[in-house]
Length: 499
Image 1 (cartoon, rainbow, N blue to C red):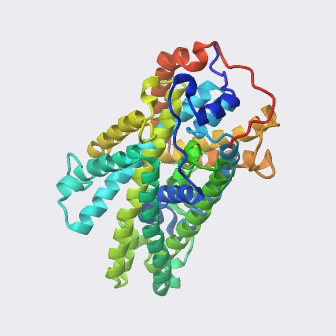
Image 2: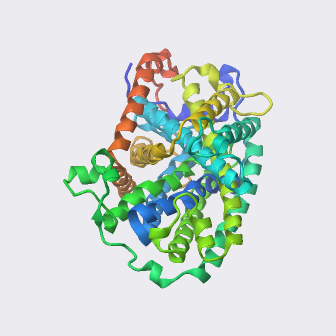
Image 3: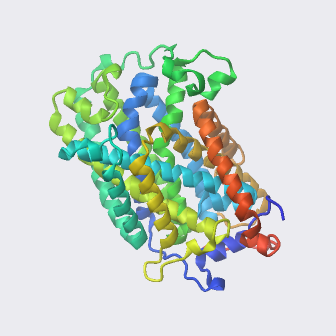
């Protein structure tokens, strides 16, 4: 009875095919590489490109926000390489949770699973409120029910979460079709933004590219300052290269969703090939779009005049191209819709994996006989996100999404060399180059970005982890599958084909 007991990879692979020992059908394999890339871009291209660009350019980095997006993209790409090796070798629901269970032990797996639920739940809720605000702006709806300020309940956020939750429950194939359509709309408009915006870029707006460091305001001191400034006794400041790094840690929120692709391993037709293509394709396309759009935005208007709530649309309005601003608003609604949908799909798969292992009640992991989806856990997660989105203004908690994702990426990066040492004979369709050097660099880079988040974010993250520890030791530690049979079974020492 150890918190570091591991789950045999042979069992993970067997579960990914079917749960016949418990007379339950497995998840349906409907997805191809283009569907995975659609899911990935669907969740990555959203809040970051339509909101965070303006906030971080104006408050932290100036035009240097372009560098912030590039840094965050490189760190995310390093983590994606590690995800690609593990996902193609062990294509199972749960992504980082499942990898940690097979390599570092049960307690680490629980921590990361609990962490991922926080990441996707808050991400979906925050984006749902942003979606409601964009819709109100487009259609002139009352802010009392669709706005962020002065409203008791946000009906728009609740409505879109419940609607997309139903789509996620009905089937992953249907979710993929909706997501791919929305992705085509927003990628097309993002390309348009870059092409049209280049005509309005002024060199004066890009100088200085990294504004000189300045003392932080009253709202950025104390527990609101980055951990690095506290650890090294630095004066709280914004802009300069410190501001660029702080902005990189925050805009990392924009990239966090790509690990949702790894959660779909059990629903992919050819996971050995398609998971790698989906993960790397998502990051490459998204990084290029983010850097291009952010460069155009800071070049169109001075960073001190960028609108925080709708920066891209407002930038076109400022240069007299209001018609383009309308197109951007339409793309924002489409973009945020796909983010919410993929968040809900990913949460259902993570919860399914945790419940299947018995760390939470296994009954919620039931697969619908017709739709082939984990409908119970998906329904529970949908209702929880709807309540969060409807009643809590979550913009202040958005940094928790970044710290949650970065924590997961650290563990996934470490898991690669550990699994290579424990199972050198495992069939690996994709291998991270220069291992263990590159995985270690990935883990350190993610940890450094975590340290550039505020002390306040770390404290909130600690409270969530404490709550998770209470649930684990109160229920999962003694009632999960490994505990009931007395620990892990010996791992067979032969290659394990993954289909």
